[in-house]
Amino acid sequence: MKEQIKLMLKGGLIGIANIIPGVSGGTMAVVLGIYEPLIEAIGEVVSNRKRRWEYVKFLLKVGMGAILAILVFSWIMDYLLTHYPGYTYLFFIGLIAGSIPSIYRSHSDMRLSPLAGLVFLGGAGLILFFTLLSKDNPTVETSGSAFQFSAAAVGLLLLAGVLSGGSMIVPGISGSFMLVLLGQYEVVIRAVKHMDLVPLAVLGTGILLGVWSFARAIEMLLKTFPRETFYFILGLVVASLFAIFPGWPESFAEGAVGLLMIGFGILVSLRLSD
Image (cartoon, rainbow, N blue to C red; front, side, top):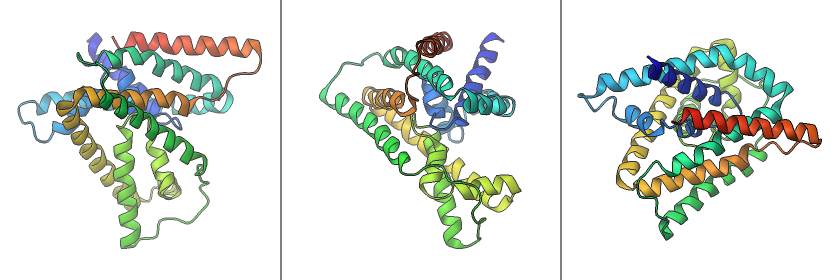
């Protein structure tokens, strides 16, 4: 029972991460030590008949935790991000930093090689690219036009859903940013506000396809090139520290509180990644 509750708590933190701008649910799964089993379960729940029920139970526990956390804590996170954004992001920096040693120990052979170094830099460079790109693509307002049904609009929204869903499980990349990048963030927000089922159905289909296809690809990479894949993930995670860093508090007292928040995040990460 203790392990079941712990798994739901981890799912809850993944859910909370997905509602925080710039924080990746995939990164949080890595931080909490369930990234590999999560990718395996998503990728093989359809094809692996022998373990299908085991995967379904695992995904239900993580999914229930994520959904409950989003419903219960979304207003809390909104309050914290409105009134204490710096401290909130410093806590998440602590969570991520505390996970780095366990990520490095995730594979038995993590000897550094030229190829491993290159894929590490590639992962870090990818996050830095998206971070710099996001500065030129701020989150749009929700006052624009609603979804206009056409083949082109459906195709673009479906593509945005696939890339957004895939980015939800890639550490360091925010799914909501992919919607902004493709100009679909406003469409989705308005569809949610007005419960417009057509664009929501198109987006949901794309997200499911993206989550499943990206999970299959990552699972194959973890099986075929485990060391290089872990170095790539490590690069994504390390660079995400820069991506979400809010700046250091100016006063000594605020800086001390910031250090406490980072330390608390590291402690939580070490406890949950056991």
